[in-house]
Length: 266
Image (cartoon, rainbow, N blue to C red; front, side, top):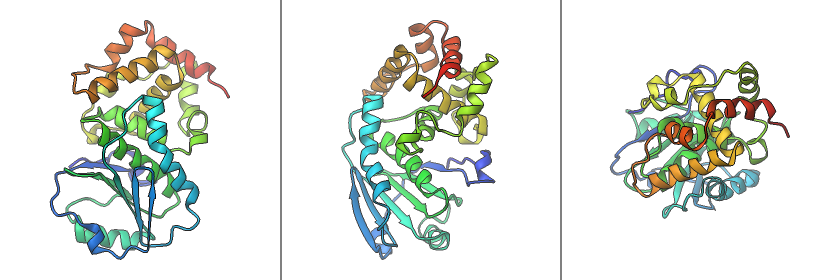
């Protein structure tokens, strides 16, 4: 079982959990009375409350796969993703106790078995962010046979924001830009060395987001290398490490990273 307990969000906004399990007999539709059901792009959405008023969020979900495909040049998944929404924490906890008693409580969950991925979220002040974050994980894992942990989290941190906020308004931006002014560049090699959630710290999530932002909005060569890296994974070709590939493709990668954040403006 994979856990984010070391992440500060466990104390503040309850760190999000990505769980990849082999589960048997998961049939939530038969065990819950769903009040509303919608289809939003690749997502089949079921909620125990009316989804009236959430049309904008559902529209964002419908476009999320398109956004990922356009940004990363990924082929669309051949399966849907099941999204289960709960009105409050009490009913969510009760549902988890009944169906997943061995999984530690987290405010939002992504679960992947041999079939379609499943995302479970309860309403909270971070409801929309939680949904977009976990649904990004779900789409990545429905398309790719594996995703390096740091990149998986970095992409989810990037796409968890509303579309108009992704490029300029992520809460991490100011601290990364401030560090870049002093030439402080997070080590991509160090991020790549962390293959267990228990090893991730708050700064690792921020730094993973920063490298994703650099590759998506920085030099064209960096984005092209990210796309090639993911294409190799999708084709089950050993991809190597992205740090080595970037160093080969983009000399002075760290100085390019610092320059990107020092000069990035609307």
